[in-house]
Length: 620
Image (cartoon, rainbow, N blue to C red):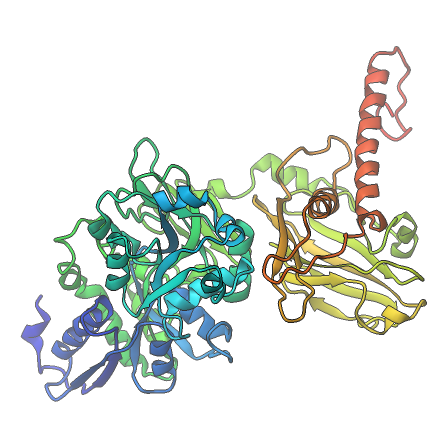
């Protein structure tokens, strides 16, 4: 039924203030759609004011300071920063609430003219940073207000590059507040590269222009997620065709030359936010307009192909209530519950976004606190461990050990080994850790990033920063060294501790080894190595603690064989003291133990021997 026919029948009087974008844009249009719907459902003397804004952090601040009641922002990560007090927001704002997330499938990506990319041999973002080509790059304004320019700066920083470095190389930033000028510069050849979002409309401007999309390193994406909340999204080829598309169902059109997945930043969804203090009845009413009048808003976009539409229509009520890490306002939650639409609350922490929407069929990505993974969404029950896997887990025997006695097996500084042989997916892994200072002990410093939370328990220490009995959950990315605290100059300094983590049930489970420039005025990334705990060869008898066997020696040896030079300031870093660490020796020992056991088993199988049960196993 047309809501206009009921105008004036309600006694509810509202004076609604909303904030959209620059004026002639999608977000402002969405505000007018909501205002129109609320008008027909309230008293005739209700009033409506739509403020223009930039559509980014400024809109969120306008909601939080009471300038407006509702505002659209994009992407969702901007609101996540406000909620948690990071990135553009110095303090958390726990009263920030979501109403709905309109479907907008988008990415922030660096595209270079194919001829220019060939000229400088650019294939990855790392190539761009290390080869320093003097490119003219078109992007958003870099003033901490334009979220495109802000995010571009964060990607550069995570790769060890500053915004100003491009001009030092002889390049140039070409910036504008909105997208159309920068698209024109790139399409007309006035810019060599385009680093921007709204990629679904690029084909309208680019035609058949050949571009090369530079992938962002997975470790950098993980660092950006850990520090700021950015999510990963890929540009990749559709199976069985030459049409390129964006994961989570966005199909931006034919980008000629895209032949493999290109990892980059997710810039999806138009999120409507409000404050917790806004009356529940008003938020419930606004939510009802979004759901019940959605056809009128969709009609503004249906003349465009969905793959090239800013609104990825249709608006599905069961999906718009999924607002990522931003909790729903109680008024919106009440409406969705009444309509029995989807899971509510902090949707983004466990949700499936599949080919036909959340919970639909097809491939999707699970987005979680510990990263993301590919899942098959045809049958939710298939995502839990199989029965044999569960049986195997439950049949593992309980074990115990003396941590102090276990110290004897440690072979380097710092020492860390697994206390128990249970390192399988889903296992609770306990690592015994000790650090010791002694005359002439080498200094080292690196950063460790872990997909899983690490629980740190200090058992005993002397002259160390960790007091007896300290219990803490460490940051996903944390510094590891042996030259902080008073123990650095005290030969009696030592510490013993436990580090506990629960492995993921499914891969990937990544760890990252990073080394940063020690120059206090630089501190840029110099080296990074990424590994997946579940990839590669698995030992047949005694499992490897892959943090030590892969991440440690492989990363350090690769670093030592490199030029060990910071390409931002020229500082040459010292050789990493791998020979004083426990990693290499542990690697040799665990692999030798498995090799020796395999040789022993082969020997027994070739002999006619009595049953040796009780001597370490059935035949051992």
